[in-house]
Image (cartoon, rainbow, N blue to C red):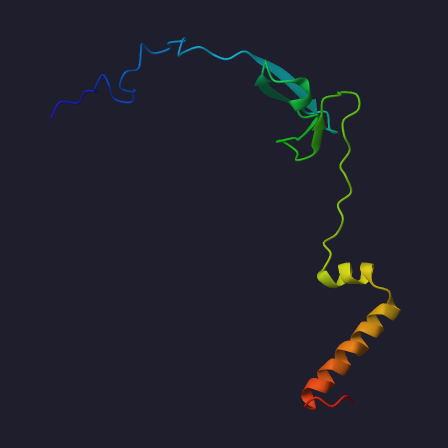
Length: 121
């Protein structure tokens, strides 16, 4: 069997000459730089006709995960994350201890009434 390569192996059907630069019309775009607190720059490209207010002021830096802003001298600081709260923690924020005691007593009275067959305890 002869060892040889196929001329089309590894290329797309319909592809032009290798290294062809013009693969269609590219849309106009603008480059926007973002910097994180460590000084890393990230460049994002947006359509040139996009209104300025639709370009985000802050993104997440892909290299560090820190927030990155458009002002090189004043990058955004990492916001303090609130710890995970349980359902009980949220309930305790809404109710005082007196309200909790009152609600618990009311619920216990209803439960006792159901178990005793309708008589209140």
